[in-house]
Structures are given as C-alpha cells and as structure tokens.
Image 1 (cartoon, rainbow, N blue to C red):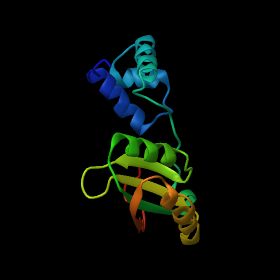
Image 2: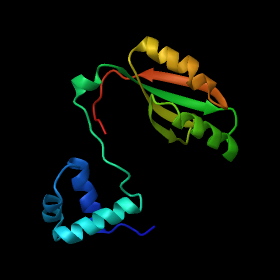
Image 3: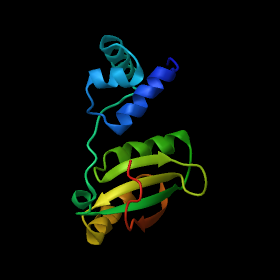
Image 4: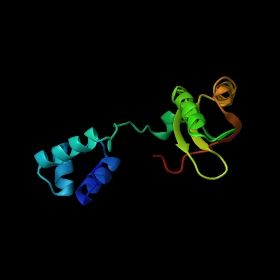
Amino acid sequence: MHALDEIDLAMLRELRRDARMSNTALAAAVGLSPSACLRRLRLMEGRGVIRGYTVVLDEPVESAGVTVIVQITLDRQTDQHLARFEAAVRRCPEVRACYLMTGIADYQLRVEARDAADYERIHKEQLSRMPGVARIQSSFAIRAVIRG
C-alpha cells in the first residue's frame, strides 16, 4: 500500500468532520483542483483507506437502546482460534465494533442492545456460544462523551 501524504491526511481530516461535503469544497479546503481531489479520493477508496461513509445519529435517537462494552477472553490464542472467533463475531449484527486487544482481554466489543434484557439474550444466545470464549466481562455505558 502506498503511504499517505500530507494532502491525503488533510482530506481524511476534512472528511471526518463532514463526509458529505462536496468535492469542490473538499478540494478548496486542501488546496487542490476538484479533478485532482476526486482522483485522490477515488484512489483512497480503491485502496481501502476509505472503506465507506456512515451516518452519526444524534444522541436522543441513539439513546433508544444501551451500549455495552464487552471484553472477551479466549481459551486459546492461536491463529486458528482467533480466526474462528472473528468469523463468528462478524455474524452478530448487534456487535458494532470489535478490536483485537493487548492486555488481559483478547477482544473488546461494542454491542448495541435495546435494553438490559435484550443484552442478556445477546450474551446467552450469541456471545457465550462463540468458539473459544472462556470469559466475558460486560460494562454498560452511562452516556457517550465523545462519539466516533
């Protein structure tokens, strides 16, 4: 993969602030012509630097449910065990983010549930049945301070 230069990084910063900005506005913000800006944008999309665009909802809309931060420890950490767990977690629609971690837990997940009872169902029917899971530690978020 090609390294990102300062202009690419500036484009990414602008898009993080407003992914819906027009190509003309993005080009002006980073000092490029619109055609050069669009060419760089398409290259970053094609290389997978930009994997997609999303909507960030206002807090009252998202607060219709609960966010649970879940730490998962596997019984073994071989490549095969990690791959099996990761394949299973990708099939769980309530898991909105999953990170392979250093430290005590192997994975950290962000799970969205309707309420505590719904999370209990997700825990019992999905998370605890994933391959290799030895321990699950769950923490309910009180509120978002910074949302990404």
